[in-house]
Length: 294
Image 1 (cartoon, rainbow, N blue to C red):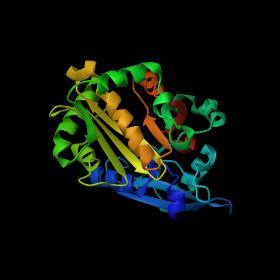
Image 2 (cartoon, helix red, strand yellow):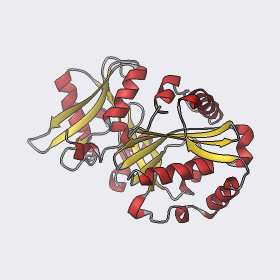
Image 3 (cartoon, helix red, strand yellow):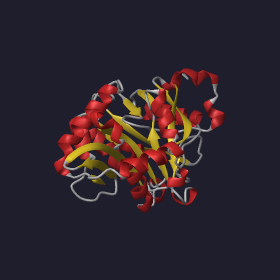
Image 4 (cartoon, rainbow, N blue to C red):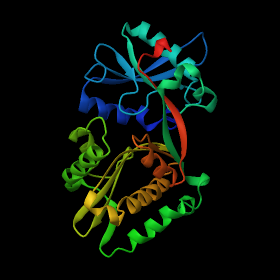
């Protein structure tokens, strides 16, 4: 696989993220080339074995999977993704347990047979598509950001190894509050807070004095990034620590050349609406637990 292809893939389909997930959960992350009907080659990132893919493989482990056109690096049409995974299942002699697609086209999103498998994520464009970042935010976000930044003693910066323990506590407390289906393993969080600058991860925090109030953890792959984990202190809610954290993260990602940030799926409608206020648009993706029956 050439670097030019990998740069266009979802961060969740990248080698760095797949290897990290496999190291934490077990199993093996692999990229497989698949050819259908003599046409151009496809790439399928999969996780094989381990607790997340027992007795088979999944294309979409923690985050999206999806099958990509090798030439363009773009996601293949969903039917073509399903056909490629069926071919790969025959080749490996293992069942495909799950497909989680990247965001799909509006035309594909309306397919009736996939209605019960639809979810939505919020995507924010950066770079040339957003030359004045703060102007792209909703007025309420800009007001909350200005208020937070005026708070004496509040600062924003990169997280380091010394903040890993506090970050885990904030993430777990937040996941519990929003009724997330599980708590992220500590090792998964720790690995996203690098000891030195890392092209694959960005970890940003907000402090008030010595106390860490908010954290945001991002996965990066070339021109794309994904906002994977957030944690914040409930007692500090009125301070709005997430506003300066996310604003700083979006500026840092822009400086890294990122053009598209996936702000993620939310379990609560209020969280989805909040992400849209940052100038993000909703896109549909599919979670297909038995992809070859759809």
